[in-house]
Length: 172
Length: 417
Image (cartoon, rainbow over all chains, first blue to last red; front, top):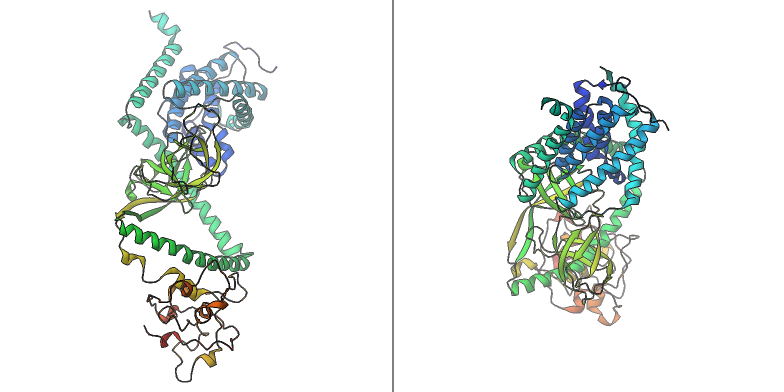
């Protein structure tokens, strides 16, 4: 298994310039809003979540990760028309978790990224479902086959997306 | 104390951020409208995303138009021919249906029913979506500055789409009818049963509140009932695809609907910005019966050759044009060449079925073959006057072979007006 435990001194911490910090989440939100109009299957993907995981794992800073997830989630809620905070809560937790995991594990290789994205996608959906049903009283339906299918699809896209976004990384 | 804060700093920040969001959610759930801060975030998000979507849609449409209108014209002639045939068929159908509509209007006037008219609509382009499986909304490129208001109905030519949920300066958020939070007052076309159309979490559209002891058949059309005060009455909602009563204890049927509008491929929509409500008057039913107009259209009038039909010196000013269709002598007031109804009269070889000549029906009723579309002469010998249009709009029709046994029908201008 490619996931290896690393000490705090061994992990690389990256930063991004301001254009990437703003542009990549904005582009993810735009694509998430625009592409399902023409490709219905694209609703299965959650690009803002993938971007949240990527930034969180690259920065390896839990506070930065949870704030990134929170902002991206709130903006996604604003576009979906749902009450603000449903995606915000879920992505905040994912951002915190991914950055905390990034400190402990080497998540630079494709296999590790696939598993991590798979795990966090399912975690995100569980939190989202809980909040949507428990707090907002949305009538949500949970389907494991559908969620696992979507998780694999997102994980595969995530691997390619992370590979592309790696080019924007800057060493601290 | 400081060491504890430092040690659990990350966790504390996480809890604070989560608590703030939970608090915000609770406030939003309690209130029906957005708070100021919530609205601000929505405005920021929409303002950041929709300009790019508008730009992309504009470029996409521009490129598509350039390709389809100037380069890729393969099959256009054949398509044009087919469309013309369709138009002619539809015109015939329209005439038949307008008879029913006219009768309905007369009855409405008689009982002082109020009618709703879509008096003003705004065309809008769909530029984005909610991007989530859980919320079914789209964004259109018209907003507050274009006169859009919340709760306005959004439709297409095929059927209803949804309603305006939130408005921004130049864009609006439209809640689709397949969203689980939407609700549309609906009525079944044949059985006249009323219910509520709702979306499901899975994205299906169902008709609720129809009792299990009612008979609903798949294929029945669902229309808006007007009861929600958003959608005017009579707009197509969809077609019943499945009716089930799985749980005998349930009071209501489980009725699934296929929406009339294709909600997954929306491009252009109409926002109904003004609906007029008025009582129809009998004069609005029009001076001509639809069946009378239909009688003019049926392409089997045994026309005389142009030379024989037009005595010398009486040729109208339409000389350069081919001869116009004649009207039966027994219906002198019906056909005026140039009546809108005679536009695009069938040509030989088109899809319009050959029917027995109405003029023949008038002169020799016993020879008339049975037809689903009866000429007016079979129903009412006296005809009402028709609206006369400009002679420049006269439709032309090539003459058919003359019928020797039938006297040549007089020219339209020869008849009393």
